[in-house]
Image 1 (cartoon, rainbow, N blue to C red):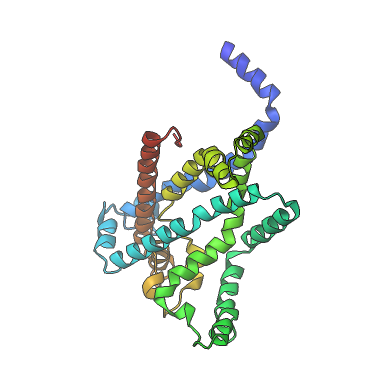
Image 2: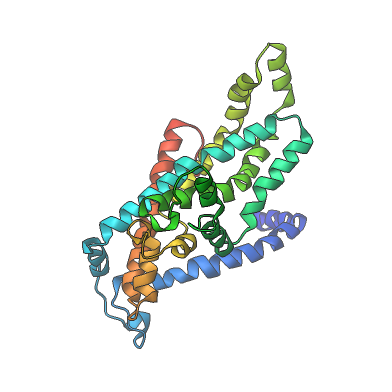
Length: 306
């Protein structure tokens, strides 16, 4: 009864916050937890007329089928290449941009850079891919026009498999780098100005202050975001990859999510169980990576997710 009374007073004092939590919690339950019921079709030979419970159980047969498929090695390597490339190229840039913006004293310049770098984030995936295709067009694209002006031959960027990952990654960096700086700028805003004032009195240069004050201040934020990024390592952007694919670059652009979509839903004879097994395998790998990286971060530092 005492606990109920304390909880009642807490709810009465902060009822607005609890009401605000209803919508996101409902969304998470309906769209993230309820669909887990259907994950069991990965272990069955799903038949729509029999339903999920009535379909025959086949155990790990769908997973074994994927592991033995001739596409398995290719889609795994493509997924790892794009995801690791994205992490190495894209993760440090928002940190560098946030530190640079935090260090500048020109407020007008800072606002222009923020607005310019934030804007691409609000472009939809479909429009973004359209922009990429137009910019890289071998005949009329701005990039190839510049290459031709330098006396070189135009490059078929979207038709060369070896360039697919670079086009995907660097267009993603351009689109998301500015938005990613918001978190780091928020963390940098909590730095006590007196620390910088004391460092200036001691004769520290701006670079030294960044290394000794700013970077340690955002180190916990960097660690948490790195854990989350590594926990989603296998989740390459499905929509963007699918829209950028064509028959010429398919050898290097086919990833796990697009392969699961094609065999599970888009084929002439959809194989729901097979597609579900591929998707579940991808999710398990991500979950395992999250646990491992979180434990490593916990041992190496005091910052971790749990």
